[in-house]
Length: 152
Picture 1 (cartoon, rainbow, N blue to C red):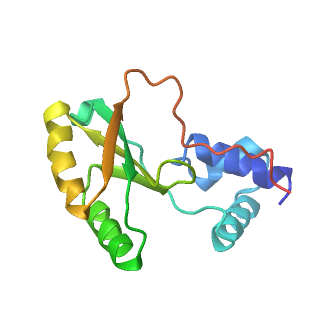
Picture 2 (tube, rainbow, N blue to C red; picture 1 turned 180 degrees about the horizontal axis):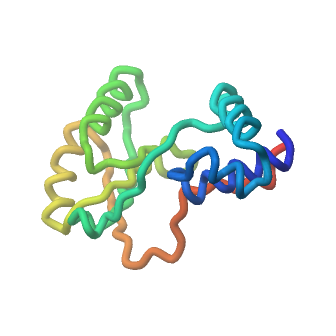
């Protein structure tokens, strides 16, 4: 991967709706050369997909919550059930298995505290040992763009 590929990735991370011609213009390539590079980045799995980012507040999802999970069960059956439960909840937008004191960290978006309560009642179907939540009061930084300085 060279600097031109990095520039293509930077451009696409900031505006994935650009046409190949617009990306080519911004990075100084012909449309065909740019299209080939984008195709190669997709084939190599560097470009994982394209999405449209939505405004949570405009969709009545103004409360972001991080839910800390501890379990006293560390077996395959419990894990499969947990994965099935959280996968079936649309408000859950991220689930992470953690090291340290927490077992899992869930990121979710809900309209309000009543929405969180309904979400909580669905999550505990996974037979959890300890559940606690932290609510986002202010977003200082949020981005979907990944840093590209570490590419070899």
